[in-house]
Image 1: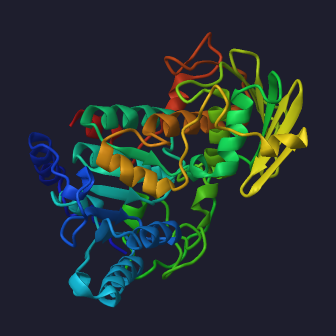
Image 2: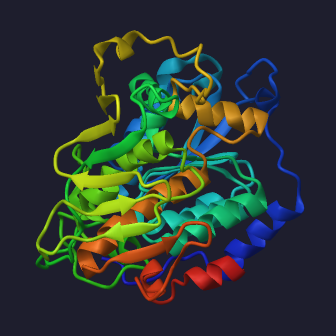
Image 3: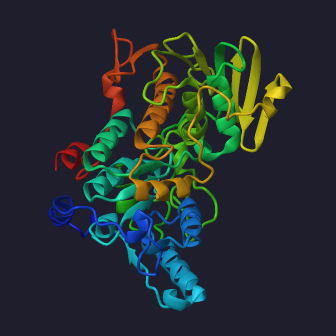
Length: 435
């Protein structure tokens, strides 16, 4: 196990990013609609090569307009496996791609320092999303970042600021925005198809908990210190970073040091759909109501300014309850009362929601047009902030009054210190934001 911090110094990285800021972003001609040639593709790097990272990389490898040129992981086995996967793919493709090489990095800052990379895909554990995302924006990379967007409310706002300042195209990986059943549900609700919306039930698992896993012998080839990064030090456990090249989704997401339980993990999907249907992509609730039971796994309520209540319940899916009907939606499922809503033409409705049938493709298209993608950083920030408010209600059992415009707690109902977490030295959100 390495006990050293990353080899790329802060000065080294910032020198590289300063160069990128000083120069205009030079995208390949494919970005501007020209015919795609072998040397004329959008060049991507992949940070985090676990199960989800490999899925996203495989999706991009199939696309003629993309060249995967670099991978990065703190685990040597995953890193080398990703590199081999890319090189084997291009060798099999033959032609101009035969012999195409893929660089492999331990430290994400080495990858971000490369001026020839146009965009990065971030699929690390949640506690790394904000820092890598902000540094990627400073390096003038476009970003696809997995959900939930950040580990805290403050991180989410700082990430939005960085993306806007450096004019990045940023797609949050809440990919249900690119699924037809969710768009149908949200557009129908927005157009009053079930009357006045009264309540939304968001069914996902429970809140995060503190990590209590025992120490295990270190995994050879894993830089555990770098895996932890800004999170508190603890000894290695394979539940957090599985040994070898795993095929499941690791349960680091259950723990507050690295994720937020299912409230943020699945909530980043389903609370996102509630936000979309409510037209709250730039806002959020004004009141958060806890439950009395300190061990509760459901029951927190979010109250919006128009009186609509969003309730966290167990299960999976989103239910919209209106004065004249009801809609339940989940992946591949759409159920409604009245049943005729399943056939309602969407193109004739007054309010039209953006349509995407390919979440990664939407990001790549926006890299060409420089438009904001369907799940832009602000959308991801607002959704994850809602998830964090739900978790805070469980953890603190306190009613909270929230100003969604300024993103602050009001009237002593909630503590603004809850919006951020402490980082383990030498990592610092403030230092990275200021640099």
